Length: 392
Length: 244
Image (cartoon, rainbow over all chains, first blue to last red; front, side):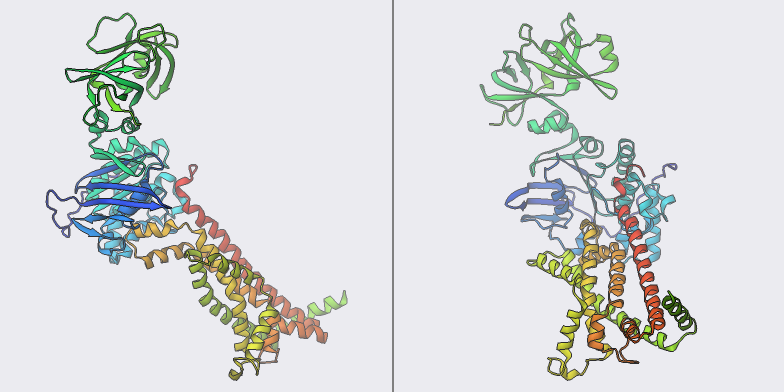
């Protein structure tokens, strides 16, 4: 692979009308799409502003690809509308369609050369040959694909094919770039490189971008805001930090890497803190309850992030953490440079019925001498916990 | 064995002396079958594309009909066209029976299902996402359809060549509606039948060899198209080839 190309500066586009500061570039309202009577997409509201990268994050089957086609104006919704710069638009509205560009999950490159593929969108727009050659050369340079310009597409590797597909969309310098699972079919090293390309290019050569992904890693690395899609609905929209620190639902918490302690009930409230009693009788002090709090006696789930669990020797001195449990190590699962430590409280110990997962560095695990069967002190600050009313 | 040797010697003489009898018959064969395929393409490709891409009620039935057309016996088509063009037939007034036009008509009817059927398979082999993807890059519906057909172009080429091969070698229909009239409607296949009956094996063999050579060329082109087609299919799987 050659040396990474220096990103060319984004050329000024004089034909772009200015937007009112408060006006979103694209806005979807009450958008619905049904297949066979079932609502696959039911999005009350979704906006992307100029200059923004919005990720739509959801598991497989959440309706992501359908939403992609709706927002790209290549599929008609059953209800609701899409506004572009404040004006309602329909699929087939060529003037608006031509200001968007999409990259599919498994891009189909047209038979021919890389150069022909990258020039496709410009050709269908009737851009003159010299202008096309210039813009294709630019787009190839942005992605370091100059050396492949004349190559037939069937000679490309998976990562190269995906970069050609991205170049093909970026050559249009779209106002809105939509990407459907751009990294899903790439192996890990290629994925990292592609993510870097996207990070560098999505903001400079498109006015705004919507990244559709099932991979929180993509969303957190690239997006300014993340909309979490679950069963066709947007369950939370917010900055990455907001999703991590204040997930709106247990699903969002779990999907963004949190673990759940299930089946507790609210046993008291004091000083803005919520006391939760777990099934085994263990009590937790929780700093925050989702969506306006939970009532006394309500059944709740409590979310925490494994990296917030602090481990110490079983006989460690007092610390400031409100939640301290003596637990037994049941398993150690290496995860890259880190180790996932499964912990379980047994019936005779302090923390009966508590099962936690902690994420520690390998060095930390060594220092503590963690091994299955050892007892350790697990600590969680109240502020690292969040209670959710349990779904009925 | 003498009969074969004798025939081979006579065939070689006819072929290399540029005998006008063989040349004229070959010329008419190519002209009739070529025109018939052209008509077959004008009918078969639009039908194949519509059925391959479109979704409409009765589509399955149309597909089955097209595939039945593959097995259409030339004599049955000949019979149909004969009745159509005969003096008592609905198109009798045109006086086309025993003319090259009648032969073109019959062969076009034979070629159309071939062209439609292979076109249908070719456009279906291209993932329909191609059109969506073209649209996602700003193509109009027509431009997106064009992109789809462009991806299927090798298969479309195969449809044309296969249609040509099928009609060039048939004898039943041209015999019935052409009448095998010397200098007017005699083509290679009908000439072979006649010369064999007359015992002029050399002439028949010479014509047979020419027919074989044409068929071989046609199949060579078909095979090359099919090999190329495989390469084209691979290219669409570019993102899924971890070893590339």
